[in-house]
Length: 299
View 1 (cartoon, rainbow, N blue to C red):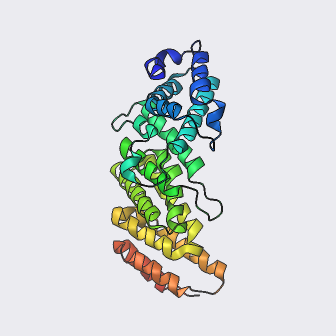
View 2: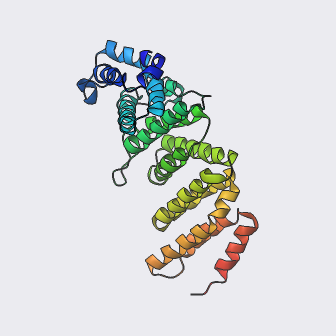
View 3: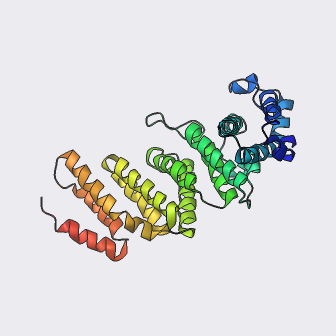
């Protein structure tokens, strides 16, 4: 509460030593940095209660700090706090009905569009993407269902899609849909995908739409050769949400198909082409024209 109430004061250079002392002593003492070590229940309960206010206050300070050097340090502290306590308070299950009580989610206002609220959301998304959604090869990260449930709830609370959501979250969600077969993970990923696509659709045009197309193009390029059926299945889902988006991706899909066939060195891949045509058949006149072009090709 102190950090939020005194945020405007703590944003000044003279008061920041006090802020750093608060963080070092109360929120990031050495014991907290040892994730495997249990913290006293009383300490955890106190942190859980006050963490939302602290995060809101620290985000305000990050947005209003005048010094670039101190601002960078404060932002790193904000990331560190989110990283440490996102994991500590994360439920072991992916029960979305209970996920909403996570203190970091409580810090994310459902209706706030202030710079500090947007900054807190952006920082949280970056921490999730960098620390909780990274695969090791094809092995999914631990507690993936819980992380995805948290992510979905975070998106729903902010009610506004930002560039960082598309740029950092969407590639990980698409990767999960390709590589993870667990039903609950697929369900949560599909819901996040739907939320992101529909959110971008509501703010059609501009940088957000451009970034969305860019992410899907990269996804098509990265996975079509090995996972063509999964790619087309995911894009069929996207077609239901935003047909015009998938129509924009036709050149990228055709290029990926041909690159895949070239790498395999066996000429036309009939099965892959049939799967692609099924997707194209759902894309109005543009899809039908592409089917005709594919059928007229000679090798």
